[in-house]
Length: 302
Ligand code: HPA
Image 1 (cartoon, helix red, strand yellow):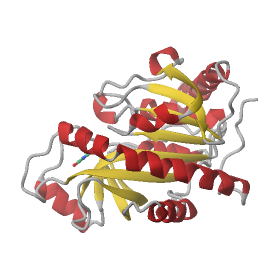
Image 2 (cartoon, rainbow, N blue to C red):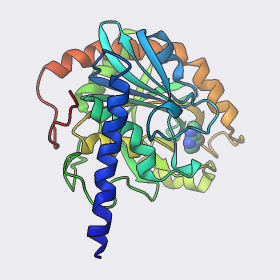
Image 3 (tube, rainbow, N blue to C red):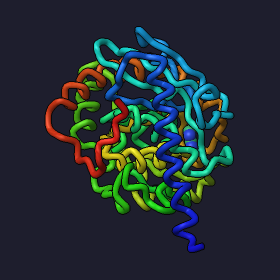
């Protein structure tokens, strides 16, 4: 049997698996979220603020991977942020945990099958740009994928999206402008920058950070990029927000630790929650105006 014929049923299963998970979630709530969020390391508090919320632990959702990292709660919360229904992934899984790129993006595939049209992805990152300080919030302008993996490798399932998705505007310019405007209105100093993703789990060496600086990265982290790729594959608009939890390796000459990442994330949670709370209604308004640059057929489950 040719590799293509052998592999095709596997791809179909991914779509069906995501649909099954979405149906399961819909059986637990009447809400039909149009905005999805992914909350990164130490940034999970936003989900606790939602009203009319249901919370489903990842291990209860069919085919969901389980987070093994401290600071990642591992639950899906569907609820209301003000008047807007949202689906929140509180915690994510990473390549460095041993999951494949496809497993890493499965929760985002499920959000796609729930019918979200916009995704807000958050993460903790190291600051390469010396104008940032520890705890700064950075709205992602673009990314550089150095993870050595792409979740779209393998046969393409057209029900999700096209074979070669455009990444020219991976991060919506209009959402980025809204995020920066809302941050300013709230008195939160926010930057805009380029996020480089590495596989981890070791932090970078100072030489690697100098290299990343040279190629145009402002931030470095171990997540987000695979989810952004599949979100764009599904025609979902993206906004990314990093919390610069530490200066990147070699900048201050101090050792890095996961504890510092969690601690800084927790210190800026209140600002983060306020920014997300302000961003969601604005994005929700924006969803009604103008079509997304959708590249995929509609794949809502109703
Ligand atoms: N490097 C990679 N990932 C990170 C960092 C870092 O310095 N901080 C938080 N996540």
